[in-house]
Image (cartoon, rainbow, N blue to C red):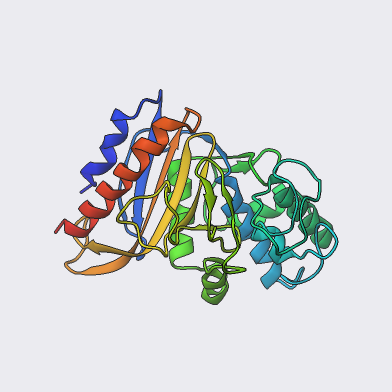
Length: 291
């Protein structure tokens, strides 16, 4: 049985929206809207790109602490937005590790670094390493590894299930990627202002104590994911409670770990800052109470 709360996307002031939720055990709790339609992901591209970078790390093509990007920076700095590169320019604005400077340019340099190390164009490496193995046939990278992914809600639910129960990566690698890197680092969360600290893992934003935030008031501090300027988001709350029976054909029981994706065709703005937290809280509440 699908979560009724997912249908509230019908009330969002957007032309089109699709959403879905998946438990940590891989059970899709439900989906709503045109979940097979391809939407531009904007910065929700970054978690996909980061996952491919981590595959390259596990394959031995790169090391997380090897030099990459500006002088003194590493792959880890680039993934954690602490390389010192500017937001959308390949220009150094701070020493590595000093501030959390959210950087599209950093992810573009990551893509170049992996492509050089593997001798495979990054878009193709992403396809081979992540998209194809997960059956994400409707997803592609059509430009920058920072922002030019295109995907469907169905495909992103497959990715969210992978993150919660990794098959492509060692679970310890995923745990590190979703743990705060360079704790205590200050910075600006795009769309939400200065945060102290501005917690990030390796390609994933971590909610921590940020306020305001695009997830819900009931989201745990360990919630991680990403949102995009194209009106998209993916969050995973490892502490979210769920009650079996919320999904189709599930056995009785309960557990923790829930992910949610939403894709729209309206740019991020005040509508999203108002709609998304309430939507998230409704999904978390219903998933934990349905029997």
